[in-house]
Length: 225
Image 1 (cartoon, helix red, strand yellow):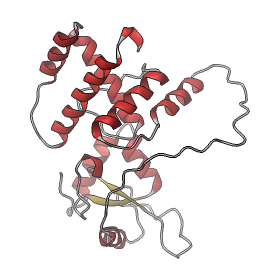
Image 2: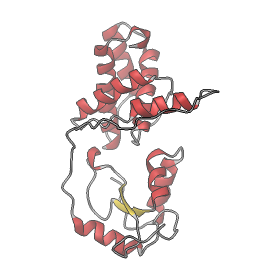
Image 3: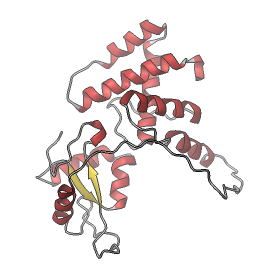
């Protein structure tokens, strides 16, 4: 790891971060400074070094389209190799399948920052990889009800669905405000119908938190979880 961080140290930081994420999601109080101090004493590093490493982990969460721990603004200078390790460890700690998003996206960002990027050859026959996927059993009636309630309009921006499907239905995507992987429910009080643009913004937008807050204010059926 950069700065001579061992995988053991990084794994401890990721485990602590995932625990803080769980605490925050479930409304359990905790003190971040105390957690940094415990890690610093354990590994002989400064509190500040662990705080900054937590911000690196927040950045990986953001690349995965997930909410990060409040007060730990994402720090971008992770590097694709470190991002891949952090993403893998997050998935191991949470018991989720590995999406391999962070390494790819950090490489994209790095290439985009280059002043002169030559035209790439690409990959004519991309190699297939197979991985185990974590699925949740959902109630189809919930999706049907929410789509009917939306009546073909995005419940965030109010725009009409961008196109009609082959089945003659307006196309909107379903979004769980509290992710199922974070313990969210599959109920009409946690599910909304969005156009693709708003859906991506809910995951990756710089203002996604204020956007989520506005949705709770806008739709009376929603209950914060």
